[in-house]
Amino acid sequence: MNVAIYARVSTTRQADNDLSIPDQLRQLNEWCKANGHLVVHEYIEPGASATDDKRPIFQQLIHDAEQKPPAFEAIIIHSLSRFFRDVVQFGVFERNLKKNKVNVISITQITSDDAAGEMMRRIMSTFDEYNSKENSKHTSRAMCENARQGYFNGSKAPFGYRSISTVTEGSRGRKKKKLQINESESDVVKLIYELYQNGENGKSVGVKQIAVHLNALGLRMRGDLWRRQKIQSILSDSLYMGEYYFNVLSSKTGEKRPPSEWIKTDIPQIINPLQFEQIRLKRESRKPSNSNPRALSSPCLLTGILKCGHCGASLTLATGKGGRYRYYKCTNRRNKGNIACISKNLPMEKVDKIILNSLAERAFSADRIQSLISEFRSNQQTKQGKTQQQHNLIQRELDQLDIRQRRLFDAVENGTFDSDDLLRERTQEIKTRRDALKIELANFSRQPKFDLSPLRASQIEKVSNLLKAKLINADKDVARSYVHLLVDEIKVTDNLAMIQGNVKALIAATASESKNGHLKQVPSSISNWGG
Image 1 (cartoon, helix red, strand yellow):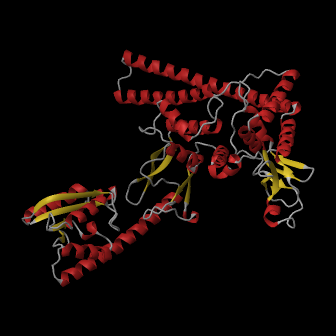
Image 2: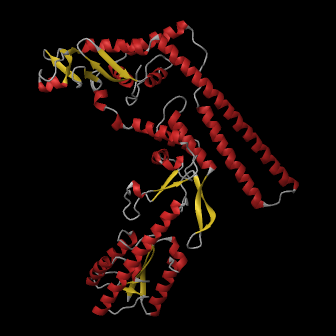
Image 3: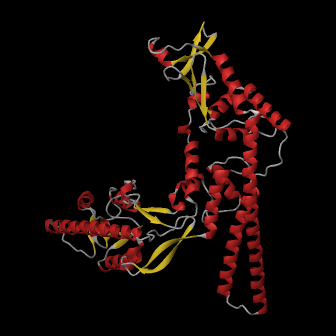
């Protein structure tokens, strides 16, 4: 009879228990030959669980078996558990196959083809399902305890780390593993965080630009090109600040478990927690959902931040005389009538001009510009001093590595070093460290350089006037972006306006003045400007 054979293992561990794919194929082919059956197809499925039917090779097997007429008369398996561990699903598939005159035969659990044989197969499948669930439960419990003790359960270490064997043995006699920092990969991780936090050449960069930049440098993600998804993953994964979590996802459904079931394992830090939190906040601020697109796309300068000083509602555009006159009007008064609020309509052009002039005078006064520049110069001088020290230390280590490499080659030429394996190991060690140091030097060269010479009072005044004029005379789109950058809220009554925000945004705005004197478009998500 023409038959197909189906071989499956769930994990590589089963290869140690005489259930490897080659061993199954050998036994299945020998049985078919001994019983006079012709094998017309082999279906081989490595690394798939038999608790469900989400197995591509299994699905292909069933599809072929349900053709009319089928390409074979029986499916030969090593044991019933290779086919299905769920007794209900096993019965469903077996009945459907029998309708098409295809039998399922186990070479290690031979049963008759009558009612008694069917009952026996159900009993054996029930035990297989029970054993599978018990094994899964015990394995999961052991792996969770392993994680609690600080050991690594995975087979492939996360980027930036390597897994190393410890002296401790597990229940199967294997050495338990822990995560250790991979120096060359961790330098790339640090570079990713540095680029996202500080940008390149004074310009902010996103995850896509970082991926492009790394690929241009010839840096690879373990042989693959960098993609923005991987950059996002590295920037958001808490393992890089030393917090690795196990049992986060259900292996069955892929869904995230409740945080109470996660198991935290402390591992060596690549990124300090403060920098990780700063990156998290920056990523949050860049989310489109955290900006107000309606406010920024509105034709009104102050939409979204202008509030009624009487009731706190927003002020929005209202028109009169067929659209010839434009006002800011309280939405409470607009929707509910004068009984809801006593505020008056405010002429839009006049309010915009007053707010813009007031903001320019206060935000870009000579005293404030002087204070900001002094603070900036002080911070940059401190930063450049530390940067130069780090640069010198790295260059010194590079020089020492060059000396070590020359001595190594001299020893080989003199015949005092004759171990090829040790030579390769030492050479690779030096190369890996030199590559990592060169990446760090490249970071320094990308940092923007600033002229820190003190400015005269006349120059400060000139900068102040330039910034004021640029803000007041800018086109409405640019002016609106700047106002929404610098201001959180403006509360207006009939004759008073109160502006609230944060000075950090002002520093960012001042720094964004370009060399040719034009105001750049700025992100709307920066907030908290004030006194």
